[in-house]
Length: 227
Ligand code: CA
Image (cartoon, rainbow, N blue to C red):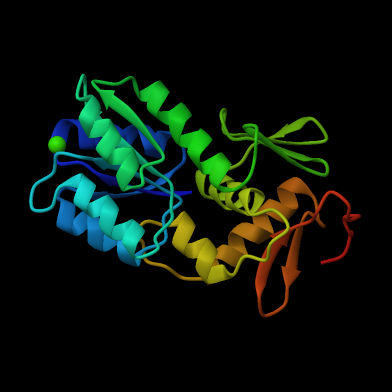
């Protein structure tokens, strides 16, 4: 899952980046409203954390412009404590949730997980797909109840496929949601990660749709032992 953070306070920005990366999110940072608006308008994000008090272009304007352009990613706004008008303006501009500063990182992470989950249509934090279970809260994966140890990139890939369960996801889309803006993107690495995941999780869970991309099997499908 790839997250955009638009925050001008260097201390909070650094803390958010560290916390989100520790939670296996891919993170892009912007420290003013104009840069944040541009990234949110041109890159595919699974969620955005948007401060409202920003230089160059304020957060409410950024959000209004995204929504006017049809950008529908979940947006969590950071507001000042006791400024209820700011929260109202934020929701009216298209925000999905907020946390008031100063906030606990744990609360922010929980709200972010809920936003991403709801955007993908999942009601709980554990996504199940046949024998596979992904606990998005703990960042843990199991097959038939057996915990499987994955690297950060492997987890990001399987978590994205699980959120998009049943849909074919192209290599380009996977690349865009797993790597940050500055990563040297080579779509062959996706194939390498898929190969490793198949070895760890068992064949048949990740289906290759030739020329289109990958998808996780539906619960109704019988995992095949080939491919
Ligand atoms: Ca600010």
